[in-house]
Image 1 (cartoon, helix red, strand yellow):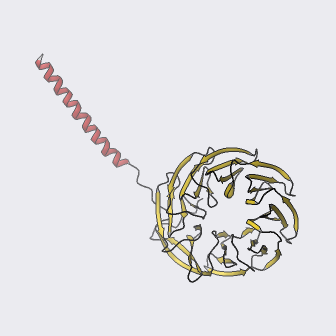
Image 2 (spheres, one colour):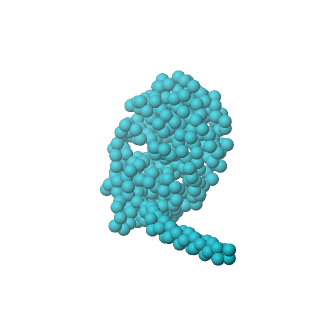
Image 3 (tube, one colour):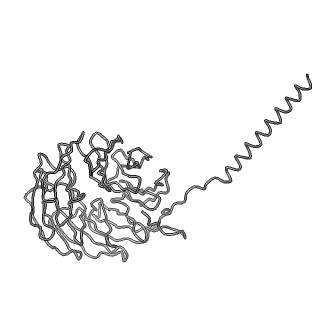
Length: 376
């Protein structure tokens, strides 16, 4: 009996040793076959060149056919050759411009703070110039041969894109809060009294959607979905075909800049200094990450990464799927617009308040690694 007990103890001890060896071997095996950490296709970055301009940029620089367009609070609209990295032309308005220009069908539209509305051609020449009687609120929109603006008096005006003559106006019951934007020939805008209006191409009211709180931030359209944030710190998705709410997610802040979207996800920065990634269909928060400060700049998708600039000197990169940080670029002074992906790299904007001078900074990936991935 004693010999049997000793034999069982020896067998148990041998089994323990065998399991331990297998476990250690398995750990070694898993370490050997573990996937390496992802390598950024963007970072590290180095400065390639600069273009100086007058004034502070209005949040957004846009790329159209290799030309970069933006406006400044000094009342100037700029067109930059993105390849040659030089100023092609600049236009001076009569007063301060406080919103980015609208680009559409070879025309550039902008509005100043004295209610001047301008249409420029690709060479920066004035096609038409109108002085409106009402205070313009929000950005300028354009579609189907019409230019759209909202006013603080609660009107949406449609002007002929060719002449600037008024085509029609729609009177709401309160001031325009956001928009107008266009989807499927419908004009959509939000009002101070928490409503979204849908108008026909000739200005007839098609429908009105009551929101649960006031609309904050821009309206964003992706496919047949409208995305917007409310003053109750929720982010919302509306089906534009049925005009029914798809989902509502509480994010602790409101959207401060137009989002970016890919096939499955939508990315946005909000007022509580965070970058969010949501599933577009169901609204689930896939991940969120804190950023150094609030941001009023649209994030940029660059291959498998999402880039975000904030009201700081830092531009941050995150992997789209996991939200892990992919890199950081310190510009040395506060960044003033969205990071913009170009064929040859990236561009950001800086501003020297004492000199009243802005700087367009062209960046490229440093080292011998491949250039920035252009897949969106």
